[in-house]
Amino acid sequence: MASGDTQPTEPLPEGMITGEPPVRRRRRVWPWIVALAVVLVLAVAAAIAGEWIAREAVTRTVRAQVAEALDVPADQAIEVGVAGLVLPQLISGTLDELTISGDDLPLGPLSGDVVVVAEDVPVRGDDPAGAIDAELVLDGAQVAGLLSGLEGFPDAEVTLDEPNVRLDTVFDVFGLEIPVAVSLTPSAEQGAIVLAPAGIEVAGAELTADQVRNQFGLIASAVLQDWTICVAEYLPAGVALEEIAVVGDRIVADAAVDGAIISDATLQEPGTCS
Image (cartoon, rainbow, N blue to C red; front, side, top):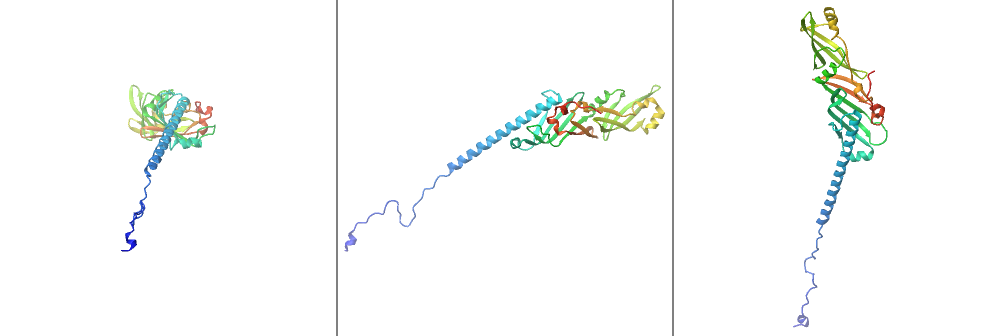
């Protein structure tokens, strides 16, 4: 037997396995993922909280300013909406679109539903806003209330029948009551709603204004005239009526608002009818 055969066999160094590569331990990456997720969640929560606080502050401030400008109770229901995210707009210094609305807003003896949409509203400084459009909606009862306060207005039932305002009354001729219906077409003129006769029916027969005057004389003058309702004196001076129409059973008045009204006190004062 050769001497080499008698040498003891020495074991391989620990950790070495013949024929197989050494096994590497895998690093645990999930704790880092969890930590990153937590940070993202906290950042999103902070952003949401900041956005909510900013939106609440803007709506509360605008609501208070509108109530003061229109001289309505502080608890009057006024909705304020801001399009898009508020925080970036506050940082830029301009609100892209601001919507203000209220139902049955009391404006002196006038009340109605109001919607105002303003664009490019500055949040600081005295710069004017961009385009501002307003809409005032009156129902039949509100229109009747305004007309009843006009001097010489006859005792009549007032209804809204697109595209006109309709007056139903009677002519008293020697104790005989003759039914009369007058259609009035609305228009906007220098801050007022003007209702002009467009047609008349006497006892169901359509007649011209001249025919009615010839037949009934002074009695007819009570209804065959223009009726003017000054609206401007109940609105800020910076609001200008542009168009008025009967839509369904409502009168819809569209107005343009001077963008400087947000900072110019004179435009916030009540207007007048020229």
